[in-house]
Length: 351
Image (tube, rainbow, N blue to C red; front, side, top):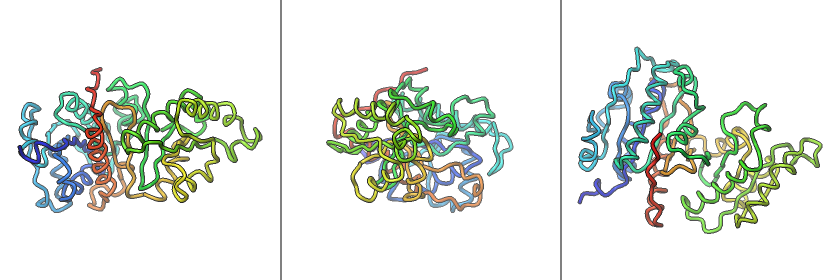
């Protein structure tokens, strides 16, 4: 049996055709070290792929193309990189332009990726960035990948973990206006995120007794109620409940010191942050080009680069593929660990 047939099968969606997704996918897979990690299935429009290839020395990557799902399994045992060429209508699209047809196409790629995992054709999913504005224009009601993947797999408890080098951050709330955050956090949600974080650190990263720190919401942990009471009323009870359940967790800790404790002093293996920018700002400062997003709670491994569609540089051949490479490495690493410890994917429940 060949190395390819034994390897982890990685499905990669190209994201929004108008962005840098296809470019970073092609650049990442042109790296021989990445190619050696598994067998790869690109999901996207072949015409979009050809246009991106023209930007970045097309001869460096050999891609076998198929149009029928029935041909995929055999193709992936014989070729390091296969494209499932989905002729989704993308209109007369342009790089750097928000287009509802491109938004719709990017969602269809995700649908196909989950379907292929359900069929056992792929093992893990890596997703290139989508445009939230484009999918919104296409009538898509979910705020992003994370929530939609949870919907497709009937996953009730899920979370977003961002990893940048030695810093891991998990968000209690994700894509919300800041004015809505205090209403969106509650004791149950924080407790579930702490438990998901602990499970991921054990299952995905092999830590026997992970150390988790939980951020405050308000400055100085509310300063005895002067700046808010969410710490005493919501966050602390959730932390205590998780601690009683055997999780090695501490908090709430003021957000202006917890990341120093985690990243510099190595006191925590992960930080639970209350809202998007509270967690993402420090992570991107230390790992802007290497950040990886992991969706927790899904029945399979899903990662993505921690950047957006890059409309400002799309079509110029300037996109850095480092984050996509890290997303692929992490997906394969996590799946390898799960296999060694006997954790297997559960087929996603069809909607």
